[in-house]
Image (cartoon, rainbow, N blue to C red):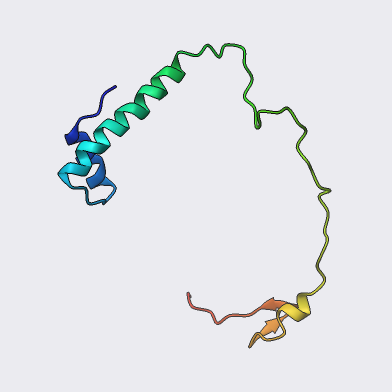
Length: 95
């Protein structure tokens, strides 16, 4: 895949980035180099390779799923103008 100056200007316009003609010319070469590298990666055979989360196989650290805090409902609603049974009360806006 090859990128030309018009494509760079169009992408810049879509991204709302102001690009001068000189910068667009320079970016054309840079983007073509990046896309060339990506095309090289497509040549690598990855059949039978499982996706990994890291380059080093490791077990993910997990924590116990338990309640560690709570019981502060009365403190949470203490400054509210209206409460009932530790719930905020708001005026009715839709009939």
